[in-house]
Image (tube, rainbow, N blue to C red; front, side):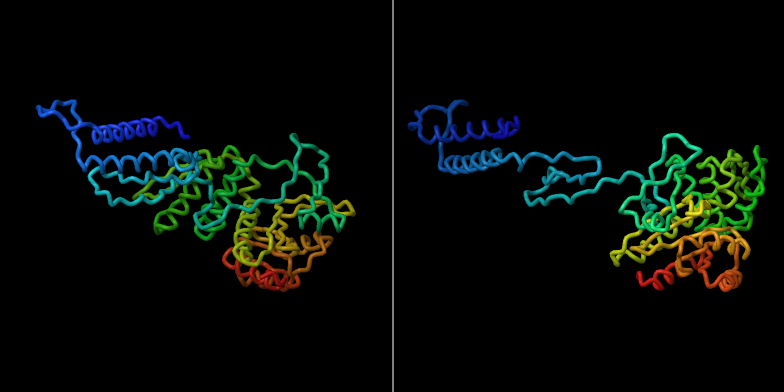
Length: 387
């Protein structure tokens, strides 16, 4: 039986009232004298009250015999919170209704955008605690479509020391914002690339004449740069100047010079592919920045390999590649034995006409700019009968 003090006290009080009314009903007729404060009058009404109290006491005893009906669940931080069933208004009638369940405000999460899913989990590759000059091959797991594909062709993946996760997330935020708003942020980005020397010199970027959206997007870009410690000084001067002053830290020069595009490719391609395969039952896997060694001991780095089901795709991200650059790249990855329909090259600073010309010259390899990336990926998945 439940030992809750409140229920024990309530039961004791009810039993006392029941006994009191029963004694009153069974007592002899009172003497004809003025009643005192201790007398216990009797009436049919008291009998009805006694019966009602007995029923209440019985119901409460049954209730306390079932602890599950009164015990409150142990709520965790993320559990639903339900307000008591009784009304909070003391003046309300007995016709009360349970209050609706209220979900607590969720903890802030580090998402890239309200409409974008978090980056997909890549296949884990164990890394040593300290860097080594002689990286060891990755152990192949049966679950990895990509690593099994490479192993079957005699290709080994070499260990690399990853960046600290929280800092990598900051770089991903910069990359994703820049990729999503490249047309707006391009001019400032180019100025940043021109001022990467360490120590960086202070330079000014004007937003005069910009509409509200470009103003917001550029200033957010500057905020993310500062958060990732890529700028050491950032200030904004409003009307009438509308100037931003920046000074770079000289850190992550490779990232700012173009490798940010690899980060963007990983995030955006995962978002696009997942949106197309949600209802197909196909699994998505991705391995970015793979350093591999072919059977003939040639080594190279792949920006991104991803798999949908059992089909493997290879992605290269370039700012403004020439035909000669891409020809060398395609020759370098021949041993992957991938069909050209499974190859994608993402470029930042090429016109649509230039992309078409490059694609034809390279044997119809898919070349995509930011604004047509989703269309190109959908076409590649369709060609492979994956959607």
